[in-house]
Image 1 (cartoon, helix red, strand yellow):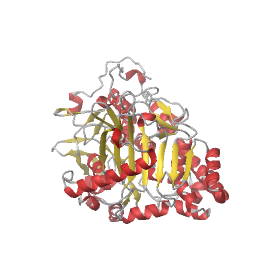
Image 2: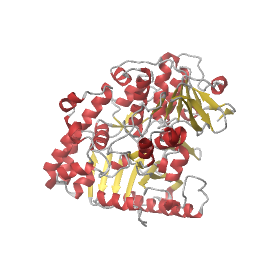
Image 3: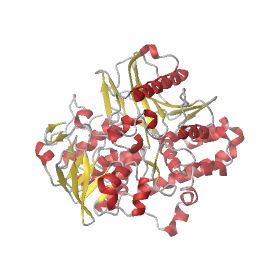
Image 4: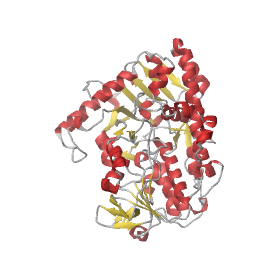
Length: 563
């Protein structure tokens, strides 16, 4: 669905905007958290520059194309809570984007299929049916499952209410208004499993989607898990036209309200004088000034490199330096010349002991097989997008978690690696192991492959500069469950994205962005827009013609010309 408006505002920033050196705010990085923050600052009257080190905006929401026939999503495999009362639609609608980012609902009776050993469970968008199916699969755990889901459903609702209200509850009110958050929020998922005396099979089924946040049950908090499950039980969706629709819509808002995107503009330093930000320095030796800088970049790189460890209090520097990152993904992108007619995501485990799986993964022990896969079938989700694949073909992603660290890839850091023989050998081994596991589930398909491509954690690190190549941010930053807020101790410097206390994923990052903008502007923006306020002006947004392309919209200008 397209929204037609009337304006002469161009779809790309002007050369003058790209060359401007002083702004009201500069956002480092163009992931969803950074773009949402930039868009709300722009509609709030700020002149905003988004500085992206790559050639295309979107971070983990961006897409890439191959053979002029296929379009692959990097990180958008499904979105939760996108119904009429949904959080992500409210954030986008509040910018004037209603109707410009349509969503296609996945099967509410089974948007995820969990396969663990000999057990299969279809995940519904309904707490009652979810409870019944779990108890059918694990009848001896019925009472424990009741207790577990009561906690998770209650805590998930409390967390969502806190996001929507955009208000910090006074300590005296927490016990009354958020009892599950007080009791379980910062305890680990394993602690809740133990409290409920759950079997190994029940734990595996309940934690099967934990790779969505890249942490094992003994390090993820109940709050993290509850937020995720509540998010998808409210409905699973896919953006029509693919993940790039999100970034392109946000960029239309930013540009329409006087902002700009500068690509191939890697920030190497945040300029700080007398305890406050003054702007940024770029790798090419140029700079830009602004009283407000928002980093949507990796938190560890932001604080230890862009700010500088010498500017941080000793305890903060040590805690950030010692932070443990969530686990990284490897993704095999596959296109076939036949339609395999799959729609639901598949979470497949070779065994029924997810705790053992994570223990083996953390140990980094080499394995000739793949014991976990997440399978996402874009060609079965978007029935409108014309670029995903030709008719009768399939487009899907096969994803697996990788051990932490880069040593197994033969590379000590994120430098030159693509032609390294150790890297190439390990990448080929992983690709074959993933394909072998996928054919166990889907049946033989190798003879129909028309495109095959693998992205490793080093690929992720190269494109997003994320420490350890994870899209999920930090697993541990000091105390269990602790994560930084959007404000920092440096005046004018703020944080948005997957490392903040608002969580990871598209919606978590978007919430961090609107929370960050609200903190800067002094407004409860999330509460305003979820209550129906539209702060952006839809009449300023550009027309979308028949050849409109979200990927083209997501490219920017540099002072040297088009990216």
